[in-house]
Image (tube, rainbow, N blue to C red; front, top):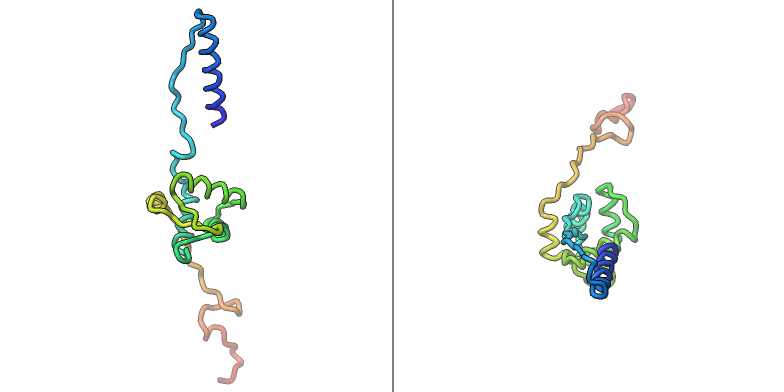
Length: 146
């Protein structure tokens, strides 16, 4: 946004100079700027928001919920990143502040995460506490007299 403001100030300066010296020509062109408001959510953030929305107590979630969900989906994030993202998403109308550092997904937020691709969860093979076998009878010692 700062670069756009600098460019606009430069063009305004050239136009002001042109009014004083009419031989200066100023050519401008429209530049389409894609800002953060128009970008689609990344899949990791869709996963994070999907996770917290499914667990939301009373429909709300907080920064600790976001941090836990981010770790669960394997996304590194700091507290500052979480705050920044929530500020951005609040401005985009994807979340509403519910007070006390809590948030709730709006309908636009639910729509934005509708096509989330969740991480594939591989089934974990059961391993007994004794380190072998997967059933109770496999864990029994042969010398037990029953």
